[in-house]
Amino acid sequence: MTKRRKITLSVVMIAPLLVLTYVAFNGWHLIPQPFITYGGKGSMADTSVAGSQYRQYCAGCHGNDMKTFVNHEWKFGKTRSAVFKAIKYGYPVTGMPAYDVTFSDKETYNLTDYLLKGIAVTAAAPVEATKGPGVFQTDLLKIKIDTVARAGKIPWCVGFLPDGDLLVTERGGDLYRIGMDRKLQKISGVPQVMAKGQGGLFDILPHPDFSSNQLVYISYSKAESGNTGKSTTAVMRAKLEGTALSEQRDIFVARPYRNTEHHYGGRMLFDKNGYLFISVGERGNENKSSQSISNDLGKIHRIKEDGSIPEDNPFVSTKEASPSIFSYGHRNPQGLSVHPVTGAVWENEHGPMGGDEINLIVAGKNYGWPEITYGINYNGTPVTDKTSLPGMEQPLHFWVPSIAPSGLAFVQGDKYKGWEGNVLSGSLKFRWLSRCKTDGNIVSAEESMLKEIGRMRDVRVSPDGYIYVTVEDPGYVLKLLPVYE
Ligand code: HEC
View 1 (cartoon, rainbow, N blue to C red):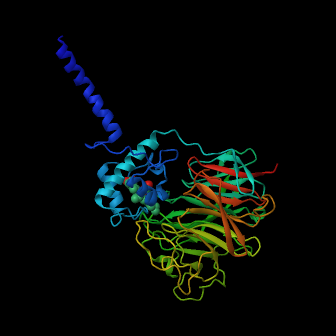
View 2 (view 1 turned 180 degrees about the horizontal axis):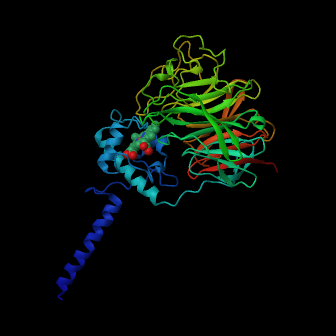
View 3 (view 1 turned 45 degrees about the horizontal axis):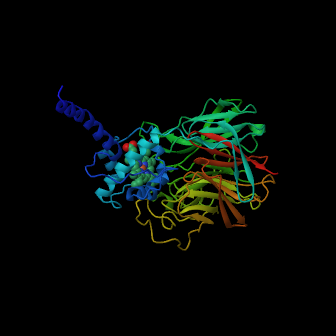
């Protein structure tokens, strides 16, 4: 072989390698692109336009690390043009907003490329462990995390039985009982759920008199009969003996059913008078259900333990009104808790982009969505220019930017020195626990605690005064132990 032929051969062999290396780092662009890192944790500071757009407009729902797209069943497909279309035109049924008014096509393509690269990085990264056992220093207390159980993907709610056992729902449709040995035992007889989008199994709430009647209440997304594809928020009452449910009966079904797959609400509580409160979301931000009292969406409802309507509900004698409505003008309420001193019902709810709220729920009041809000639409356009109007309630507290609150609980008892009476909200978005100091009905200060513990779905205080939280993906039930030295 001549020297010349040898050189030609090696060029032929090396050239494709060089091209592939170039493409791996640069994508199929002719001009070298700035080396883009995605906005995940621990990555280099990302100053690209697409990166900051992603963090501003998308990360709230899809996570900084784009984890929602890994192992995702792509509705439109994972091609560049399909992702471009998804971003541009959105998908209102699932709650994916349209960004055609926000970005130029060029920006949308850049965002698409940024997204596809980021997903590949996250998919290749090792599964991020939830912090699990560990110690967190907060302003006032040192908190040790006790891992009670590993529980599926999305443990939505934790409930407490009088014998000390825990009940945990997994949004996909399973209900578990956790005994002293901390093993998960699956409970039979749960309702059939429509586990699409944000739908599934929601709250589990034992009757205040569970010891004598064994009744539990389960909220869930119920499919409309006849395969219409529509669903709604419903509450089933059943008897729980050991790990079996019986005598199941739906005692509440929100009307109307809708074809959207998000904003179900689904939180429940018993107040001090034994009334059952149920939160129902507005099922999609494009509709105005919340302001009309002739439907059940975007409302807090109050019913009796058997599903019947209390005679003194605010709209029982209003013609055309749905009689279970207690308050209206809500968006997507994801936390309910009774104030330990006043007995009032407090609620938290998701605003759009910004404008998440904590509200004090009063019979017959209008909480304003979407006529007033401190947030704006996901695509950056205004919902309204008003943050207040006569006849509409102001929140006790609001979050801009949104924290995506989930779960709400007052600290009761003296287990946590200095936190007594404070109100806790989990944050899905920022993966922390918010502690709001309250002075009567005034929220006077806030601390974000347990940073990066995981997407926090629920926070509850057990009858013996311990705080329990659930985090997602992987799902854990965690107990917060104060450490005093
Ligand atoms: C309010 C929450 C929310 C925001 C904000 C949001 N998305 Fe989505 N997005 C969703 C939901 C919900 C889906 C549907 C997920 C599913 O079906 O599993 C979705 C779906 C998608 C899909 C389609 C996936 C498929 O299955 O084909 C893409 C791509 C996407 N989002 C990108 C973005 C980008 C980029 C942004 C920011 C510009 C963004 N999203 C902002 C909620 C959101």
